[in-house]
Length: 523
Image (cartoon, rainbow, N blue to C red; front, side, top):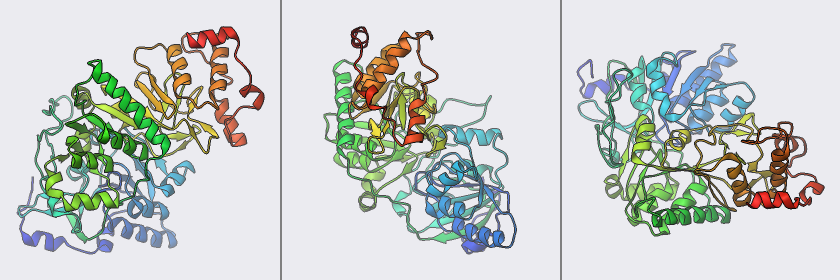
């Protein structure tokens, strides 16, 4: 792929400061940066770019860029550019508070995309030309290949498509990362696509390095800075109860012959509930498990260490400081059991379906019919984004969505009559879990799902009002397949916006159900 000979002088001739490199990014450029869930993102060029933006803004010049990444990054990238008012369009996922505030204020455009779709949309040309790639790597081989860092995400695609490339070589990243990656270059666009030849999470079907056209490299910047390594909170009682429901369910599925004793490859979203579930699996009865997931976090690292998890495939590492130390201290052990891939492979819907992945993702709310909102608060304010949950949920062998039954100290019910925003329809959601219980929705009609979700997953403070809404919906003149009272379907959200609580007036909470309604609900 290299168009010019590569030798030791190639890097030296292109090495410069972060400020000089940032000066090569023009206003209005579409910039693809590395980074996935706080791992492997460029650390100093974005900050230098933000400083340049602030100076130009002070001089009356408008300087903003379109920002593409793999997923979320960190304060040194998303936060710095947002505080400089320097991002016109953000995609495909974000978690920075300043970015979120600007999006919800209408000051930054945001395209929330299924993570498996991003690379192909870029290749199709649907996102426009990619002007600059800014990619962190752990090193460069003597023949000019790039040693990937702690995430891959969309880096392969950014390096291939960008007109200009800026590399950050992070010397703090562990040299033992070399060889852990599997970069597959066999993907094509229609009509030239062929099946991806991966049949087991541990298969290596590509090469350990990223290719780079050094003729496009305009700058090399050396850094020595850590990733965003955030500590996870210890699992609380609700998280542990959710984990217990899931493990009991999986154990029963093994007994029924629906799952092998080692389960099927696991996918887990990021967060404290996910880590609690993984901790429970680490202490549970299953052995020799595997994972095919986006992000490998503390819980899966502990499962690898204990021997419960034999192999893990992901696109990024996202560790707490303690877990990162464990990983770095024993990287020779972990590198044989972890494979990092581009997210177009780690999240590939056909692979998820063929491997039979067990998907476990968090949600903000679910309604009584099983529709899930995983991105928006009260229907209009985006939280983070859909991420890869849709890639996995629609195609998984089993699709779990998890949440505590209430939020905001009990003021919000996470089980509502109708979700205020739909990310995952009832057709993609098989199992809903709260600390109250687990609702297995497979094969049920909408009204059957509603009865089960209300009784198994809703908090007792909200259960009577949900029963009342469902009973009156069934008794109304609306269609009986998925009955709703449209004038009330979002009234819970309206009540919260207006009063700060979804709780109904006391008279409604205490109102007993009629005997026919009780018989119908318990049927």
